[in-house]
Length: 207
Image (cartoon, rainbow, N blue to C red; front, side):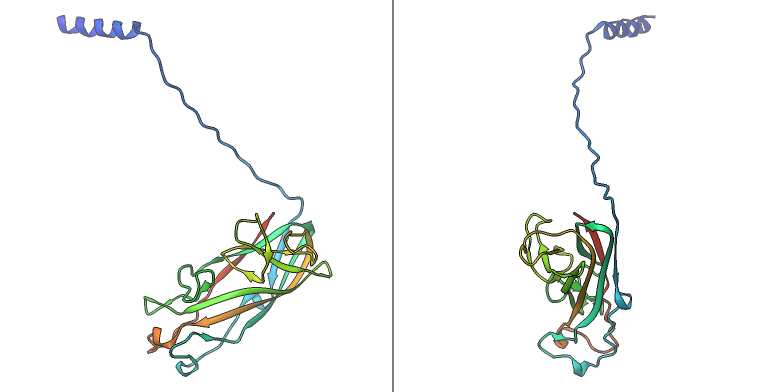
């Protein structure tokens, strides 16, 4: 009995005691933009650059070997004039043997980076007019003329008289080139066939 009475007394004291709770909060926002028009990029030849078969003798022993540039036609068609950028995802990330801003060609023999490929956009035509290829490395805050297309920046297009401001475009046509570089032969174990395995995804993003 005494034990039960003590429990009841304690419960009564807790029920009568003033209660205070510290309250905290944080805001959550959901943002975005719905654009009135959609754009679709396409590449000729299915976006494939095939260098065929090379032999070990084709590679420089001490210096990187530059292969003939691959060329494709890049087109972007929008339902209406739209501000957009182009960038890429490197699906072989971390395997570029030359520069990190280039795209990798995969790993061979488990631990050797085969080489790199860089993409560039040249001679762009926007709605029938010659324009400039421009690039931003700071997420679109500032722009400067550059043919670079890759995962290290955003690529857009500008009027020749204002190379620092992207323009809205309905139909874009341009030459896209792929510059493939193979690592020095001295860095590779050339006992078996080594596949050139570059793979990237081009993304179109709206400004």
